[in-house]
Amino acid sequence: MIRGISFEIPNSYGSFLGEILTPIDVANFNWFIGGEESYFVDDNHLGESLFPDRVIGMNGEELKKIIENNKYYLIFADLKAYPKGANIIDVTSYEEYVLSNCQLVLLVIDSVHITVYCRDLENIEDLYHHIKKHGFESLEYITDENDTRTGLSVW
Image 1 (cartoon, rainbow, N blue to C red):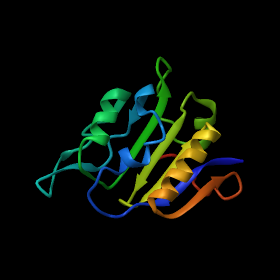
Image 2: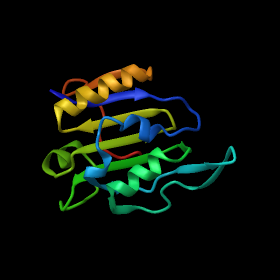
Image 3: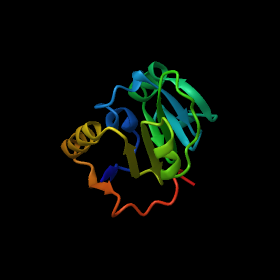
């Protein structure tokens, strides 16, 4: 069974979260944001933290504005999407994810390695084709057979 996708993005400034999540309606969810290490880019220099603190329940409209309308540098990021009104928790394993209401997990590790888990197979297919069209490298499906991740965290 397909669990998600993994791929690599360039190690550079950009709006990669917005680009990656284009096929998903970010505004339709409330988000857990792990508060990891990523920064706004201000005048071609690293500025303030993109997500300075852990956020439980960021409104999707607010997240959409941040990730689509700004330039930033991702180092580590942990974003998890929940239906509006659902109980939001930090799922830290695939087993917890399966038992939760979490609909999507997006992890960024070391600026380039992206992992996306998604419950909706149609959304996974849309994400896969979108990422392939963008030309991001090392794109592959994450399946029950090849998933070696032991936790859904960037640390």
